[in-house]
Image 1 (spheres, helix red, strand yellow):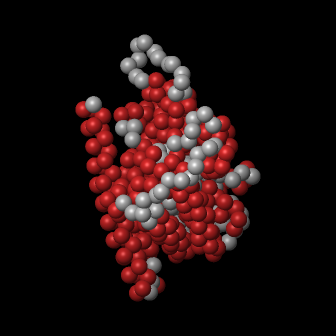
Image 2: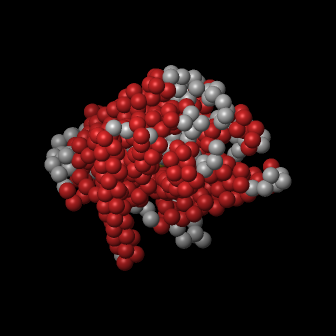
Length: 469
């Protein structure tokens, strides 16, 4: 679905090869629209999609019925794109998840990485069966018809929405730390300093929702990967040069916390909604499985290293967002905080792109482009204000992110890929693979249910505590 987060956020790769950039994130996350996502993907990938033309001409431009003209990504380019898309918002919470669940929970993180890499592989197998399928929702339609497409699209939009709420909470928390020593108050506004600053930041980003040609801000997609590198380097520098000793003992296992943190781990690997687009952008799609293995391995190594590093440095006091645990007086901390503040502001337009384009497609063809733009911008602005209100009302980053992972991401990353594969390739699947996929579906359902219940209870508990206090 980071830097999703969407997911993410970046659909995030194919068209950037034409701009000689390596895109990143995904709020996470990744973004797809409900219909003919070849056209939509260009916006999500930050390419001028020519969507000011008719939808039919867009289909011809994007080659829905022809060989993908933009399938020119090399193996290395594809690995960089997929890795950059995987590493995003979820990395902020991996040290907290490891400390909360114990060092043994690293095996859960690694296991989920292996499972998600396998599910990426079988999505490629589904695309092999029908070359006309170009997106996650196309695979859903191929497997289960219109219902499959609608369910897949609903989950995608839910992940985008919830990831943006998490991004806004992160923006709120980090802004509050950045301006911790600053007095800021508006007499007529009944909001705290942090709420005012967050509202101002969101309002600054709001005009970007009115852009139709996202190529003008395509450079922003590189911010996710850059943020990840900045955070990783900053945490390392804190331990090496910042005077913080890595002498905390990480608990072996805290079993009662595993359901809650499982959602944090699964969200870190959310990105499957854009993998079909990465597959279609490759010169040699037969290497897609290798790309998945290498990318998930790199992402897992970074997550595990950052998790152990953060947990050893800050111990039980580690914050759900690692940037908030770092000593505030260090210059590397200030850099990491600003990187975390700026990233959400660059994601709103990219995340809203698929929903906005789908909205335009559903409007009457007789409606003028100007009217469509006004409707699109107004709806996007209202949704962003709703997201802002939710983020300020429920400022619990770890619980919202965990709920997103357990409620939505587990379905997108594990349950549905396995279900699609079983339905599409049933006659060609061996018995061991049938058993494996049914087991993964059962495991995903179990993890999703217990994780959703646990994170929901914790979220409600903290809300009640805040209101009663």
